[in-house]
Length: 209
Image (tube, rainbow, N blue to C red; front, side, top):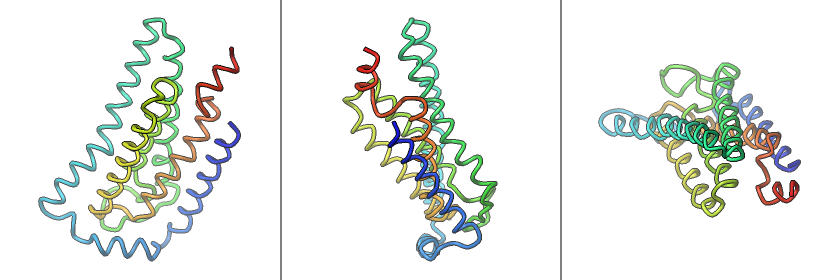
């Protein structure tokens, strides 16, 4: 458990350090990426990209977590208290991850690459999909270990895709998306460690046998 907690703290530290370093002025890599994607958000391509971004970055994570909540209620009703407890703790980790976006934006007060609502760091869409991805992996660790690799790959791909859409739309800097992942991993790993969701069910069950 200690190594996961330490890893989480390190990621949080990197998230904060990155946020402080880019709050007042974008890095050179931010300017380069923003320049390469300038104007992509206009027209039909921009509208399609917005649909993909919102669908994967906001709608799908919300639907997934509603499903986890319903699953927890159903498991509790069927007297599967252990499974229900896992689901509730996973939802808590998801909520912690989402706090990265809610608290980070007013903390760092970073301007967007173009005129857009709210502040920029970190990317809320990336935080949302990364939080849901981490929650899905944690569920698999305990309830479906054979799916861990597949779910991890899907979660990473979805996070990268959402990050790309935010850059194409010109509403985030590259470091906003990196910061979102760092923040979610930081509080997610730390929270999962405290809630005893890591390192895995085998050692946990063995210790209680």
